[in-house]
Image 1 (cartoon, one colour):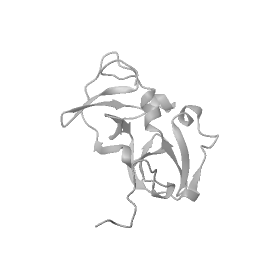
Image 2 (image 1 turned 90 degrees about the horizontal axis):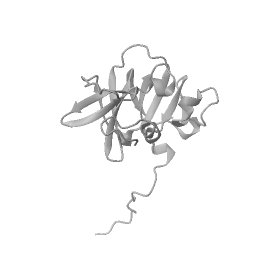
Image 3 (image 1 turned 180 degrees about the vertical axis):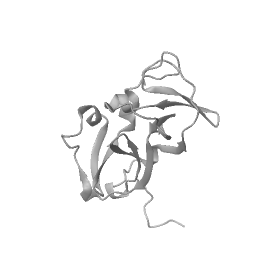
Image 4 (image 1 turned 60 degrees about the horizontal axis):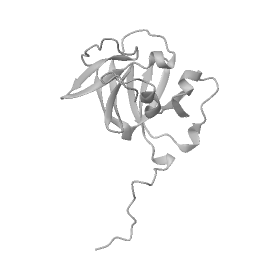
Length: 163
């Protein structure tokens, strides 16, 4: 029996009110990625170092038979290289998975559209290059990370080609 409710199509983008972000801390920054791009979040796993890999590539992780490149974004974002990163946010971009090494994983948040603002000019340029906007949340600024842009700037550690 046909339904009177239209079925959403893949081409319909979610409204800003429907957006959810997986949040994490990297240095002093609070970043978020669209939950639809997150495959999973895991505690720090053993990594295999890759000789002659770009400095952002900290190693490869075997995640249940899937080999994933683990990336430390601190250098790319111009952040201090202090301390060990303790968690992986595994993201999917097209058909590839990569891990973003982070200090701490936060909550999944659904910010209000009224809290959205353009990227403040006080945010360093290297960070501005890979974020699409910001939300004011509980006295902190959530920067929305463009994972495709981040990954396109890191050469692929396995094949040696640029993404």
